[in-house]
Length: 219
Image (cartoon, rainbow, N blue to C red):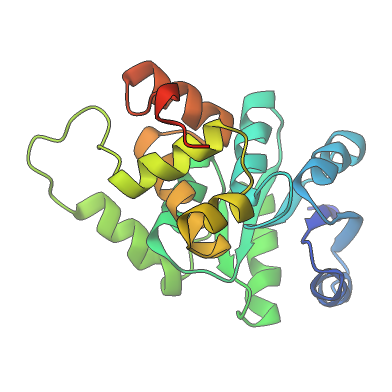
């Protein structure tokens, strides 16, 4: 195929620089734009119309999972490759359910990431063996007569209630005495359980089915 046009998003400039360098060493890949947060990458996607968006799973303003869901909601035609430091089940599952075509760990070899970009550009799914176990467990795990929506845990309800109040991940973490990463993991699990890809969708659906109530919100 012709040159693969890539938009690259990561909130760490040094990481973006390194990824860009090894991608552009390949004659068939061109990084047409970079972004350091989720809202900026949305603008880049609309402006540059890339073949593939390589998205960090965690970014300010909108996560890679939320951007993926936005791409699908907009009906845009491009491949989405999530690049993540986390192989936790909730992250992998939430990314795929949101519509990502691939999920690769940041510690992967450059050749693996390059190959994933090429495969995603062709419309293929790319789930390396080091994270595939998460999906296999999710698909094959037998659950007796599950409800239409898997119940949220008490902690997930707390996290989502604070999210409904407009609190950031850092604010939620401080309120609950947990790390930002733990908050993000809870949100990813919530997205997977509710079958959504963003905070707004999660809050809306949770309120609709009675999983959370605004009166539960804490000061």
